[in-house]
Amino acid sequence: MSDPEPGLDSEQLGAYFALMEVSSLLHYAVEEHLRADGDLSYVQFQILARLVDAPGGRLRMTDLADGVVYSRSGLTYQAGLLDKRGLITRSPSPDDERSVIVAVTGAGRDLVARVLPGHVDSIRRLLFDAMTDGDLAALGDVLGRVRAHMRASPPRSAKPRTGRGQGGSTG
View 1 (cartoon, rainbow, N blue to C red):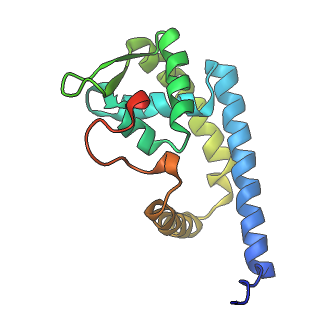
View 2: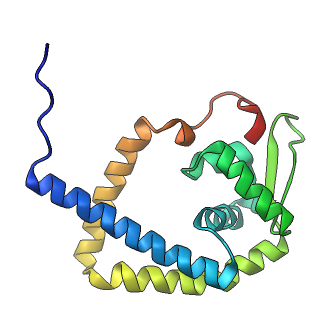
């Protein structure tokens, strides 16, 4: 029987707790702003923002799900709420009847344009104002490597799907 892995040392534990606390504080503040200014959850904002940035404002639901780390069923539910509000549309893909195409509407674009300045201000004020240019470059480098490492074996909800039309309900 092999020895169990040793626990985290104090430096690792401190970095982990700092990352979790910063992430929670930032997420809370951003979500509070999005709810107040746009009646949006953070995941709903992510959906809209990704669609606004997508070519033609459209993505397959599976491609949208692959970029947003959220359960596929939860993402489908959130998309349904946005659809009911007239912020997106969902329709069958012309290429594969099992795929769903999600498109941002004019109202969705307008809402993103309305909440984006406050969103950017919150991120700048809470995260970036406390950093030097060197800190920002180092953070971007470190988090980029960690993200790539984590995406190499992501949780099921974040794994890109292979093949056309797999997964039924979301895509």
